[in-house]
Image 1 (cartoon, rainbow, N blue to C red):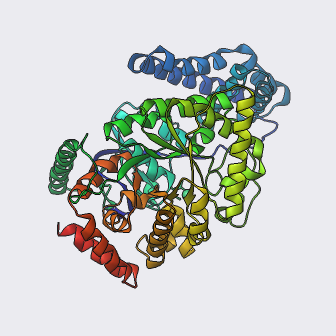
Image 2 (tube, rainbow, N blue to C red; image 1 turned 90 degrees about the vertical axis):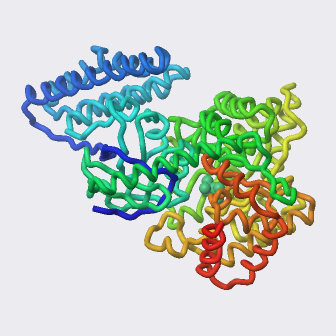
Image 3 (cartoon, rainbow, N blue to C red; image 1 turned 30 degrees about the horizontal axis):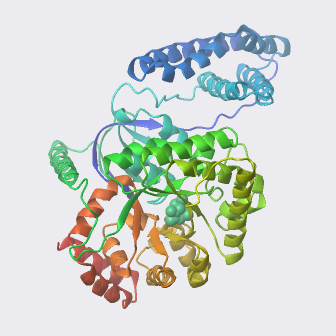
Length: 571
Ligand code: PEP
Ligand code: MG
């Protein structure tokens, strides 16, 4: 059987499927139950959970070290605490209610108590209680528990979607690939897959239904093709393709340390997009010349509360120091749309992508914004920091955001806290209104970074997550290309540099056009950097200018895409 999805991260993956379901835990109260049956359900589930946790703990201690294993030790302690499980048993006995309801009640009671404590350590324990109780609840309810941090064998993960915490905790050495039902090239699972250098196909609609645990899978993360239990001949063919892919990857290694320059001498900066300080490893491995986009929202999404100034400072410092003085663009909080925080309630909106999000939210809740800016400016003494605001749609917003920066700097100054005076301030161009007035905005920033993921969505009024209309979401749309060209020209007139951190910056068919437009910095998934350098090294800027002119004279995305396909394939 064959499934077709969207190629999201390159590579050929061959292996057995592991289907991960994120069934929600739904708990109903049942009264007048058989108390003995419910007590047994609870103790059986607790025992299985303890066995699992003991195994995971030993494995993690062996493979990653005692410190990493501590979290599982903390989970075991919760289950061994007589007050905790005893409280649930008492509830079952006294109220004659079902085990899952009783346990969930006790969980909520303890979580509330721990969360209200005035001590970071105790507040963190609330997260442990939630995690471990959910494991027991899943066992009581018969929901399959797949522990991604401790996989016994190498697998291809098949899921409806993967959460940031799935990808953060997963044992990457055991995962050959991701297949998901939902998502597009610019959804966060796709971006994460490229960051982790794991092949992926997303937007498969019903992969979790069509694929079963243990099915033998082959997929091509470029083309988006997935083969389920293929015949031997096909397996051999793909094994050969995989070999070629690996060989090409090795050949690219030779470009490490080489300049990103065209034949006729035009230098550009090839930077990487990251989501956490851990991604610095991938940047160094792929010889990134800096960071063009650090999406700080992951720091907020992976937490159970707003990360405080210290936590943020440490994360930003780690990236700045890890990159050894190379320039680092850190984007301020871009939450909202599809990115939610578990601890911050957002009202339901008719159009969340057009709603209360990113800089709009930060300018409204200045306490959240200021905490981040304080951490950013404090970290600026550890490297070359560039701060960037997302979702700016007007000059007023830009000026307000800059004003908050000034306030934060003068507060730090009066507190005697050091910060660098060389921090560059820039903004994303991802909303058409900003692109259209980029001549005005350019006077007030040090740089622009074009966010094509959103710029395409807003210019063409096509939801970037909606598969039904994904044929309309096209980076080659002439309207999008004209806006990009205009932004670059407007910035250059003011002597400002322009980068791009949307996924188009790493796309082989877009790079020649962008070079022709005069883009100064290209920021992409680290995995795409060396391939981009090879392309840039092989062309002349003067030819790309002619190519870009030609592309701008074309009227449809289809025509431009065909032209660029031919250009790349005939090389
Ligand atoms: C963009 O919109 O192009 C971008 C880089 O930001 P994000 O994908 O995080 O919205
Ligand atoms: Mg965006």
